[in-house]
Structures are given as structure tokens and as C-alpha cells.
Length: 56
Image (tube, rainbow, N blue to C red):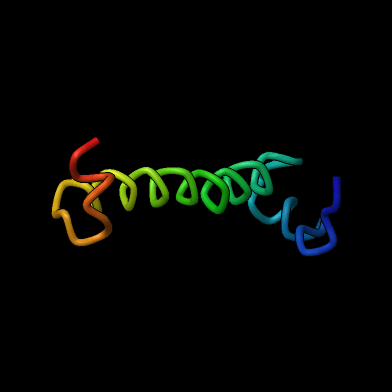
């Protein structure tokens, strides 16, 4: 678990020990899956990606 960016000083100012790094990681990780799902769903819906996906 690497936390070089989140220093104890920043955590002390925020008043949170190890809570800030967790939400930031989730925000960076979560958008990846929705974007891939959105592309896979929007592509066949518009039919601009491939005919196979549109028919499937």
C-alpha cells in the first residue's frame, strides 16, 4: 500500500488518519469500469462500432 503523496501532515490538517487516500483511489478506480461499460453499451446501441455487436 503506497502512500507517498498522502503525508501525515496533510492527514492531520484534514483531521483524517488514513481516510483521504481511500476515497481518492476509489474515485480513480471506479470511473474506469463505468466508462468501459458505457462504451460497450453505447457502441452497440448507436451501431457505429460494429454490426456484430448491434445484432448481438
